Length: 447
Image 1 (cartoon, one colour):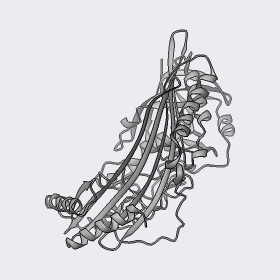
Image 2 (cartoon, rainbow, N blue to C red):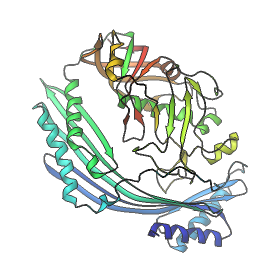
Image 3 (cartoon, one colour):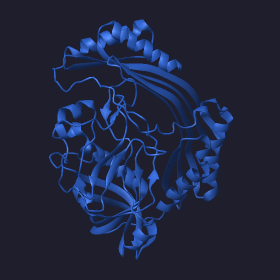
């Protein structure tokens, strides 16, 4: 048994001894981060984070507190504080402690747990390789703001006084690159990132070249006239749009009337080509894990099928409120906060069409490789107005750069105009996944 598992067992024993209906969520993480610029190591950080969040359920009320001290006295104090906080909450029958739910699904791969023991120089070499690869692409790459390598190795343990007991390790490796290109006084930035479950799975040369390519591609951009046009989204942009869409599919938002998807179950919300899924067990996903932040097994959740809304994302509370099972989407970003509803890995189910086949369907339009302002999308109305950068498309061929354009519309319009989802599904560090996607007749603002 790991140290984390022993500590979680000891903590739940304390809670049981206090005669509480309560839960302990424990994290034990080790993080290494290296930043390189100009060939020099700017920072090398190694830290450990360990702590527990305590939820107390008391007559339909729930209170939360956390502690970085896992001794019995500190756990007892945190539990007492959580119980005191719960006294100020209005009781509601749906505030229920999670109950053990068996799963016959095999646990996903945790990742390379030995990465935390690798020598620092090997991790520094990854960051340096990113920078060297970027600079080798073109002399117009004039500045590397940062090449960063990060790995996280940890373990999550959940216990509660009803008998729920879950525990699993994980390891993730990340690389990120930010740089600048210059031509005739024009400066453009480029950013790229990736992740892997194994140390050898992260390709620093690919990250460096991709960041350089993105910066160089922006040089010499021209304005486009205001129009309605066909749009092809880069996989990374698609992933970002899906992440921005995801709050509208949260059952919590639906219950509060803060989602455009409220009261639309069984109705058409997208084109027939739209099959939207969230899958917490997708092989190789960044947030793939056997259970969520409440201990419920993760699973594949069909949200939209053939354009028809089929379901929402649930935690224990919303599932009880709406009379359905939890979907394994009670996500925690840290032991220092209670669970909230979030996606595990949201994506559009790919078709068999290649990216080239998707592009060939566009006589004239835009390839969009970057958008800004996704956080401004209104989940209640679905309205959006986003800054964007991309390239012309002429008869299926990607051409010169276009800058200073905006995309406007609503999420329902966007989903309703999807005509094609390519086969090039890419798993993203943010936790989503994206494919090349064709959307017809969107509003473009320009010159």
